[in-house]
Image 1: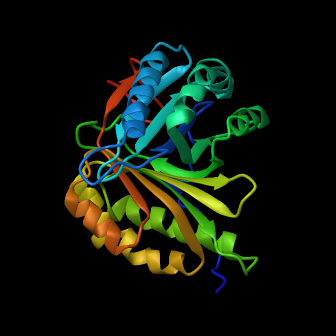
Image 2 (image 1 turned 120 degrees about the vertical axis):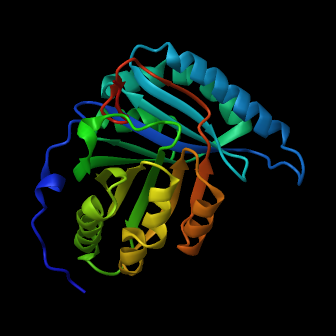
Length: 289
């Protein structure tokens, strides 16, 4: 079904203030699973290695924000970094990242990593591809950020990053996928006041989108999943696309995990672990006072 194109409402059409910042959000799992009641040695070493990486990342001048989040209910780590620009990311992965890669890959393996920004350079894509990281790269196409980019309360806010890929078989699926996510953003702007950030990125080289959302708290996310735009539009999106991963970062309650299972989202949940943000914040996660 071909949907008619609609003009973007003003709040979705505003240029992004991301500037040159690049965000990377990804998942790592241990090479060997633990038993029923205890984690594997590889899982413990993976966590230790990532905590070491976090310590070094805090001291890197091009790192604006870094998080090492432990997954809930599975042996996994969700990592999140914000770099000041593509050059900083390339330099980091060529130096600090290389130093840790050998030790890390002995005990863990990367899964989906979503890299997003206003503009993705060829050098950036090449640098991460050489590290054998399963990465997809998205460039901003539309969205909104409420509160003039003020950083939400990290004690309550939940960040959601996901990839949606068009099903094979129809040349117009990509335009339809954009249409339905435009509908989500348009309606959610007023219907879900606590949806503080909604951004859509087009994946380079694929018929796919990266969606990034920030919810004020669990109650807002619960409404989004049970009665809001996720509930309203997911059936339409499911007809033309599938999702490879949903990453939830923040204090996700068990009720949220239950609702996302009802929607059949391949979700990974994490509490906020070790984290650091440069004074003043950044445009990707939000500005400080």
